Image 1 (cartoon, rainbow, N blue to C red):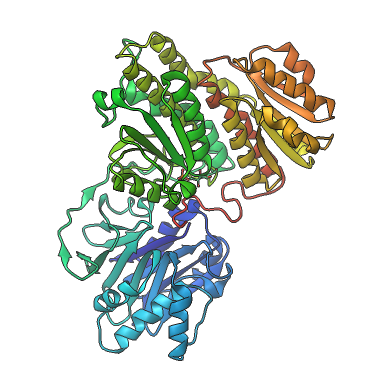
Image 2 (cartoon, rainbow, N blue to C red):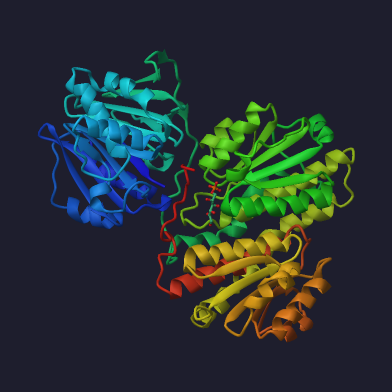
Length: 608
Ligand code: F6R
């Protein structure tokens, strides 16, 4: 989603801002722009498409000022064209905006009635007009913003500058994140910590309805009425993993190969290796876990599919009822959350607007919320009462991979811990389960070897009319995840189905142009899955099956059989998803798509 970078300081703002925007590129965007002070005015340069186009235009540009703002835009209101790119500049005021102004139509009408001419189709430009109007009647930048704030509805983070105050920036937010970085001789504002850490580790995370007034290297935090608030900067312990592909052609492939390490890092803090026990490091007391009657798991997209797998694990092992829900549905259906419930919110970015809203709703109802995030200090991480960390390292590819397997590892740990709590602290299977978890990274390494198969098969696979991914039990959410990966990367028709549902409709889709990807490890539903496979084969479907160990029956039924190591059923998803990620990656790559930044998608979805 959109990225914001602002800089005041002695360095060349052009360099700092463009480097900052590059650090945010992974979030997904379709145009970019900067406005930097030069000879007392903001000089604006914008370009459609990737950052390289903006850099090309900036090559010959020089700026003599020390203040500037930049933006990568993911279109919401108006096409992704230069006219709609940020910054929006009106009468010496320049602003960049993430999010959506919901009362846009109303504000536009009222400005139009005052004979205002618009240069773009965006909701963001309206904010620049509103601030400029206030400055025209004698307000300074800060008071202008405080005047405009109550007029805005929706979710937004905004950074504003004015040519009349050449060493000031005003940042304010309600929804999407905004962070102020305090370096010894400079101040930065960004939507993502990645753009700040090369300059400083001292930061202030703005809260909703707060305003940051930056004047040189002085920063004042105010509430929306202009009352000063005392905020102490926090030190970020975030080793910036440079956005480098390390020899891989794409971040996504690098991240797929980093999965064994990601899982090991997710597990490490919670395992007692000497005794083969799980010691979950989380802020939930044993007595609370013992009395737990219901678990809810909420997330979006890939995080939601991890949640679905978690339902099978927790219900299967701990026998606690689990409800799983997409965050955008959960937040609006007035869910009934009994006392003695735990709500788990899953979000790689920790910034997904719907998941954050779901978390807030849970807290309002007085129910405990546990977050599973990859980005420490993200909004969800900060607002949850209990925390587990994916520890997957920075995920740059828009399509989530390593965060998914890290989450599955944590859900295994949660299921084991809940099962233990329910059975008075003893779980007979615990040492075996821990052994299974410890073996996962090396099993995952062996599965990565299938990369060669998909690299070669991609040419054939890309000519299929559609893909049907199927599985039963815990393998079903992995089928859904496999289909999502193909859709988002290859832009091909793919559906995930519970294999038992095949007869209830999707069987009609199957012919020789339809690829069937069947997940059929040797678990309790193996025989039933095989019957479903027979049905698909009888209709001429082209079958790639993914199972466990040497399996002659599966081999006979399939055009291709991929053998995974046999492990506990709760851990099979961590192995199964790897071939599905590789399939999507290679088909997309052979179609010439931008694998790391698929069209229309954003890494962090900070608007609903
Ligand atoms: C798919 C993907 C998305 C995200 C979803 C939630 O590959 O990446 O479906 O899983 O947007 O994002 P987080 O986990 O950051 O809340």
